[in-house]
Image (cartoon, rainbow, N blue to C red):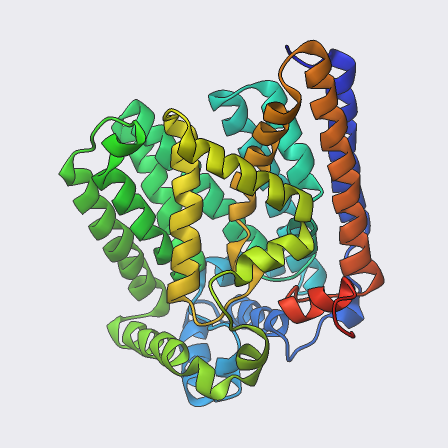
Length: 403
C-alpha cells in the first residue's frame, strides 16, 4: 500500500527542513584553520586560481619537500583543486565558498539517490530513504566542511548507481556514463581506485548475484580505462610525466610512512576491522542496527539482484577501506550510508508490513528516526563543535569517555 499524498508532503517538508537548517548554519570563519586539511585545500585552490595549471608544479615541489605538508591532503587531487580554483575565480577565495560547494554536493547526493531508488524500487521507499539520509549526522556534518568528502560521496554513489544501470541495460551509453563518473571520482581523489575491486568482482561473478554474465572485454576496459585515462589527464594537467611521477612518489610515501610521521593518525585513526561499524553505531545507531538486520535477511532469503548488488558494494568497499587504508576515518566510508539508509527502510517494512496500517507505522518510525538523527547532529556538530568525527570524539560526546 502506498503512502497518502499528505504523508508524502510531510516527508518532503521534513527533508526540506534538514536542508534549510544545513544551509542556514554554516561553519563560522574561526572554525577554519590554515593548518587544517581545509586550510591546505584553500591554499591549493587559491594558488591554482592565481597561477593557472603551473601552480600544480609549484605546489607539488613544495609538498614533496615539506614533512609538515605531508600530514595533509596532497595538491595532486586535481578535480577538487580545479573546482575550488574555479569557484574562487567566480566568487572570490573563501572557506565559505568551499563549504557551500560541500552543501551543494550533499543536496545533489540526495537527488541522485532519490532518482535511482525511485527508478529501481518505488517512490515511497525513495522518500523514506532520503528522509533518513537527509538527517544523517555524518552526512550533515561533512556537508558543512570545506573538504573533499561530500563531493567524493556524491561521485562514488553516482558511479555505483550508473554501474548498476549498465549491468541491467547493457548499453554502451550507460557504460560510458559509468566510466566517466568513475574517472571523475579518481580525478577528485586518487583513492577512488579503491572501488575497482568491487567493479571487477561484480563483473566477474555477476551471475552469482542474479545478473546476466558480463563480457570480459568490459572488465578489461574498466581496469585499463579506470587507471590509464585518469593517469593521462593527471599528466596533462600537472604538466608532464616527471611531475606526475613526483606526485605518485609523494602519494606512495604518505601511504607507506603515514604511521611513522603522522601522530594524529596513529593516535586516533587506527584500529580493528569493526572500527567503522563502531563509528556508525555512535553516529547513527538505529539505522545501523536496522541495516545489519536486513543485511542478514538479504543473505538468507531468495536472491534479489539489486539488493544483493548493493550489499556487495557495502561489503567489498568496507573490506577495502579496512584492509587497504592505513588511515581509518568514518569520513572515508560516507558512501556506505546510502546502502544503510535504504536497507533500514526495507527492514522497517519487514517489521511493520506493507498493509495500510503497516505503511503508516513505517512512515511514523522513519520520522522518529529522522528527529533522533537530527538531534544527534545538533548535539555532536553544533553543541559540542566536533569537526572531525573520529571515534575518540564520538565516544566523548556519547559520554562513554571524558571529553
